[in-house]
Image (tube, rainbow, N blue to C red; front, side, top):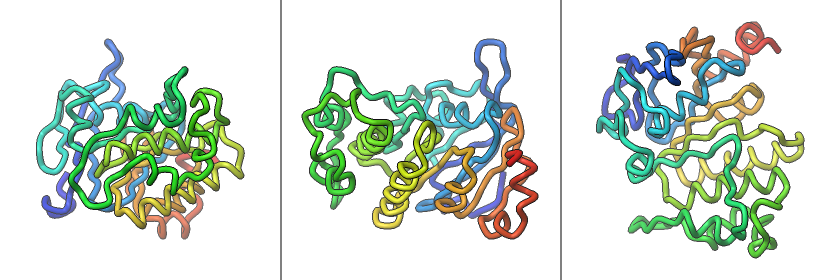
Length: 243
C-alpha cells in the first residue's frame, strides 16, 4: 500500500497473511500508521482485529507479507524483540499478574530509557491517581476500570513509541469507559504517542482516532475513513458495525 511518504510511517503492514493452525484468519491485510497518529481498526467481533495486533506484536506472526516498524522489517520477530522497538501491547483481557501488587505489576514492565520524561512508577501514578492509593493491593483484586488503568500504565513503563490498544472499553461500565478514554486522550496529546486502537464502540473510536480502517472479515479493509467522514455519514458505521 503506497498512500503516504515512507518517511512518515512508523508502522506499516504490507499484504500480511496470518493463520491459527490451518485457519487463514488474516488474508492480505495492508495498513499504515504515521508517527504521532491515532488510528482505529473498527469492525464486528471475529473479523480479525485482535489477530492484527497479535501479528504486529509477534505473538501470532504472519506467514506471508511484511511488517515494518520505523522502516525495519520485524516480520517473524518474537514478541520480546518487538517490545524492544518500543512497542507496547495492552490486551483486552488486561493480563494483570495475580499475586503481585499494583507497584510490582508496574515495576516488572519497567524498561530503562535515556529519553527525557521517561516513564516511572511515580509518573504513572500522576496520570492514574486511582492506582496511587492502591499501590500495595494485589492487582488482580482491582475493579475492571482500575485493572484497565493498570494495564495501560504497565504498557507505558516500557517507554513505548507505539501503543497497541485492544478493546479498552471491554467489560467496563460507561462511566469507567469515559474515565479510561479521558486518560488515553490526554496521554496521546501530551506525550505524542502513536496509537493503534482496536474497538467495536464507534463512539470511542470517533473520539480518539483521526482515521479508521473499517474491517469486514479476514482482515479485509472495506473502507478507510476519517472521523469527519464517519460523523457526516452514519450509514457507514451502521453498515460495518450493525449499530
